[in-house]
Image (cartoon, rainbow, N blue to C red; front, side, top):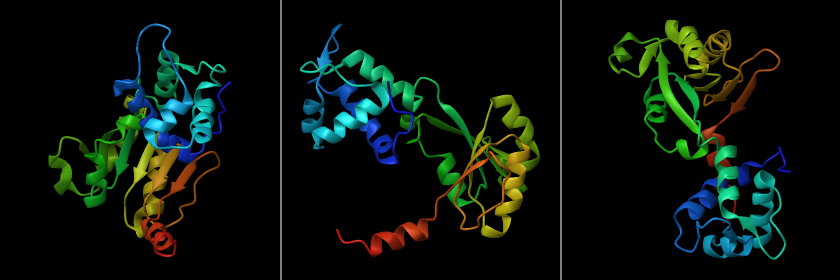
Length: 205
């Protein structure tokens, strides 16, 4: 049984495992083909114990001396990452950061698709993927959106998060340094770039 509590570090490595399984000439895709964690670890330059733990967290334990069934392992990682059905995400705030996120193509491997951005500036409405804030509730309802990236200045964060919650958003990735108050049951992940850089600055390589 896969562990529902999967660490961020593990999630970060899963796309590499999937890419290896799908593209490496050393992986057989014949029915019943298997692969061991030691082979994956060696090819990706990772520790065998770490690879075994990562894979077990999403696919259960492989068979002793046999390893993992390639097809089943691939399917398990795809299912966990949501590769077969991308989770729709919207961006609120269509400034430089928001627009960059809107046009970033690297989220699909983690199971996400940014499908629209919303902004109060009418000047930005010429982009077919950028909508006015007034359209947010209906858009989220029609597209089943429950996740949003908030990329606005600190002073606008609380107002924007309130609007997102009212539109049915229950999970927010917040790029501002403000800490908005949200109702119980709403998840907010804060991503402070300055803080992350400060941590790097004071960490020895």
